[in-house]
Structure formats: C-alpha cells, structure tokens
Length: 408
Image 1 (cartoon, rainbow, N blue to C red):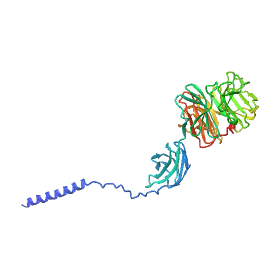
Image 2: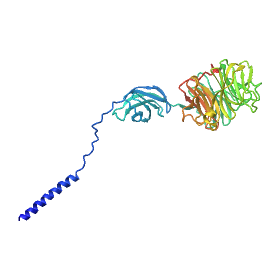
Image 3: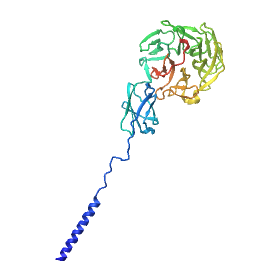
C-alpha cells in the first residue's frame, strides 16, 4: 500500500512538472506594438509663398515653395498639385524646389506635408498654362511657310494649299483668318518681314526683294545688282535699311546686301551660304554654312554702306555635332538671348549672352524649326520643315522679344 502511494505521488509530481514545462515552452513572445514610445510627430509644414505666384508653364516652370517645417531631406517631403504627386528637386527646412507638373488648369491646389507630419498645408495656385500651342487651325493639305507679326499681335503667313500658293493670309489674335494679299508669281515666300507703313517685304530664293502690300499682288522692290545670289532672308535696321543675304555656288560672289528705302543698293563680300539674318543691338547676325560648319556670325552695322569686321558668335556644329543639321532661323529676346531654329531634335536652341547654350523647353519644342518670329509681347512663333505635318506653334516665352525695327 505504501509503495502504491509512493508511485502515485511520483506520477503526480512528474505530470505537474511536464505540464509546467510544456506551458512555459509553448508561450508566445509578446506581439510588437505599432506604437513607438520614442516617436515625436513633426510640425505641420507651413506654405508661406510660391514663386512664381501664377502663370506657370505646364511641365516646364521651376517653382519655389517658401515656408517652414519642411524636411531638409528632399525625399521626405510630399507635394501634391491637385491629385498629382510632384517630385521635390531641392529641399531645406524653409524652401522646396520642384518643376510644375504637366497639367493645364486655372486653379490648382497645392498641398505639402512630410513623412513625419500628420497634416497637410494647403494653398491655391491660379493658372498653370500650356507652354506651346498650335494656332491657325490648318488642314492636312495646308502648309504655312514664312511668317511675320505686327505690334497688334496679328500673324501674317505665306500659305500653300494642295501645293498651290494662296498668297499671304492674316491670322488675328482670336484665330480669325483673312486674306492680306493675293498670290503673285510665287508659290510661297521663303521669308518675310513687316516693314514701314504695314507693308510686308519678302524673299523667295530668287535674286530679288519683293514688296507685298495689302490687297495687292506682290511686286519687285529691287532686283538689279543682286543676281546671281538667291536671297534667303532679310531684316531691317533701326534706320529702316533692309539687310539681305543668300546663297550662290561661287564663293567669291558678294552675298550680303543693304538697300535703303530710296532703293540704293550696296553689296558686301561673304564666304558661305546664308540662310538667316537678324539685326540686334547694332549688329547684323548671320546664320550660314561655311566649310561644313553651321555658324552664327556677326558684323557691326556702321551705316547702310559700311559693315565692321566679321566675328564668330556661335558654332552650332561644334556644340551639337554634324548630325544636328542646319540652322534655318535666328531671332533674339530683349534680354540678349539668341534663339536658333534648327534641324536638331530639340528644335530651338538658346544661346545666352555668355555663350552658354541649352534647348528651349527640352522635350516640348521638338522637330525642325525653320521660321521664327516674335510678336510684340511674350509669344514666339515657329513653323516646321515642309513634309512634317505643317503647322504654326505659339510658344509662351514669358519675356518679350527684341525689337523688329521694320514694324516700329
């Protein structure tokens, strides 16, 4: 009996020991808490100002948000333009720099927070607009070529329809079309500039300068003394003298010409084939091909019969390579930036006064730009090479162009 009781006690003790061992071995670790006792939320960011405050260009304008409580780590800032998340490019605790998203809207709400803050700071920004727009409502069988503009914002276009010349049409700022001048012997004009009295002067790859008056068939202004040069472009200086240039196979032939309003002609020696001219700040700028290089050269204008020594202003081929193609057009902004219309994939190249250069609105302004003109405000216009879905583009430059002296 005593032995049985001893066995029973031993069995009970072993069972209790195994139960305690099993219970302790199977117990789970405590579940980690989502609460971090060391966490302290960041202050809500505060938007103080946005620069520029409006008139941003979609996908182009650089924006600076000034305020407080931003993260100096750019990737920890969260910025929304309406529902579009925008990447911060640079950040400090008081400024965020970013590029406007590619949305076009009159009122866009900007919201800012950080990964460590709970709430957003919100402000409304008025007006994000498109940097570039097609104008003129051209049909597939229409091809605009030479363009020029007046100070009222009207655009004048040499138009071809179904391979037939249609003369010069006028496009008002509201897009309304009208006929400015009927077709003459030309199919189209190669380049045109508005001149004194509202008349248009044009060249068309011929050894002659023409005048195009409203509602009148174009007439020859001057031709004697220009042959065999085929004129490509023209521009006016501050004294209303007309400067012209072109190409010819003989390199020794004079290729630059000046003509006064009294039709006094003077020619000047030039080595190379000229495609574009522009008068700016007392100089005649010349886009030309010489020895397989695309160059922008310049000569100071002393008078209608005197030019200064030639200077190389910019070597496009050296900058972009021979595969970049030709320079077809040049113009200036009021601040001295030179714009080149080219065959390059980034069709318009900016050359700054310090000779640094860059594409205009990279990835937005594309395909060959062959004609350039500026209205009296902040819009530059360009056309493309024939055969590439011809149209006219209006580019918002957000600054004015240099004076075109013929229309002043």
